[in-house]
Length: 113
Length: 113
Image (cartoon, rainbow over all chains, first blue to last red; front, side, top):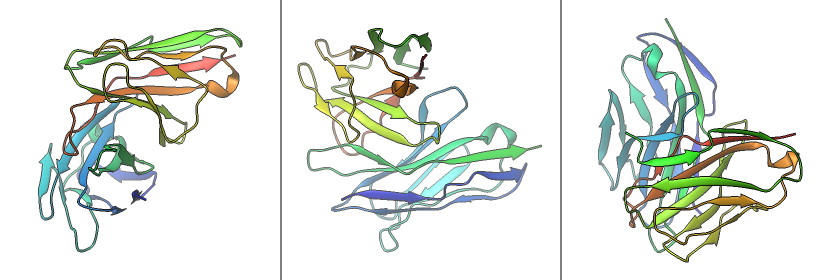
């Protein structure tokens, strides 16, 4: 079945540090890939997505590239801010009727000033 | 910019009570979902719906039930609450299609005494 494996953390960084959150997946067919972010006390928000191989999603300085050859969708940001402190979820959705999101376990990021 | 609303945000209630968690969306989305989020952050799909009069059980067995009488409304009911039901419940909606992201409400944090 479909699955997502991501770094679980928690991770603590200093402001302006470089961030990478690894995400790999197992899926049949050609899934769409997503990164969601959950700020304290809130629901999940879509951060970025990619729907086919070699697509790059980007938003708010975050980027992730859909790598079919390595089945990966790593999230990166060149310079994190305190406001990036949140929980980050990698997810995939396959077609074929089920159309259910499969989430990784989430990674808590804390950014200190 | 939330177009999906959950009420109440917080609920503390005694064992044995009947509880209904409300979820409404104004986007006209056909698909709606309920997730249970444990303290370790992991998300578990407990119910979903493809449209009016459609309800399906998710990946995690739950004693709760759902109904979908109107497109915009997807309430979750616990007939007799127990302490094991203490958790955060997140509602989401999406358009059809594997490329479509899910939009989440801010959640209901439920505590059963």
